[in-house]
Length: 276
Image (cartoon, rainbow, N blue to C red):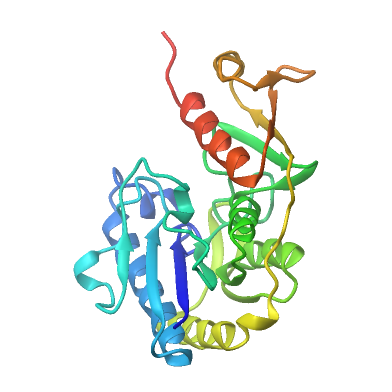
């Protein structure tokens, strides 16, 4: 029996273009949650269409990690929600996972045009693994690869889809919108997007054996560019983290991708702490 892990972010969900739809404190968030839940259900339907006996775990991977409407989620799945937790956006990842699917993902910081492009937080300007610029897509693909799990599908705007294909050329992608700017896109009708998501997930699961995991052997050189100089000051208090040349970059060498990934998560939390 195959095990599929679906990691669901929000900025790349069909129809979403603005922070009011992704932020729990803003007026349009409940609509965004409904759109997110419906997109995930479409992907679940595709996975189980291809492999009816598959075990499906859904990971709520946006913001507070408490966005998906549990009562409206496909009853055949198990949901991981809440934070803090190990492995962040890929909580539940283990060596028994056969395929990983990214739903509603967005492009990395500095990409454009791309809807709501960023890397984890606005406190982060950039992240590099072994000198290669990565965003959440690259970090999560690498972490999945450490467990031997291929990322077989991504949905989001066209920029996010291209970002995955740079790393995993054999993966399937479902572009559900075309970015015209950071807060603007040409979008599909939700029903059309969900039909494409269901079909794309079924296709991706059907050819998962043809998609190799991204393998990065250790040690792993990590560089993170932080927006705030005071965040850099705090970051250097973490054992092994050093200030690089220039005011904004810190470095760390991890034993493997997982250790580097954990340090990125910690750096983000430190960078969001208010001084004073």
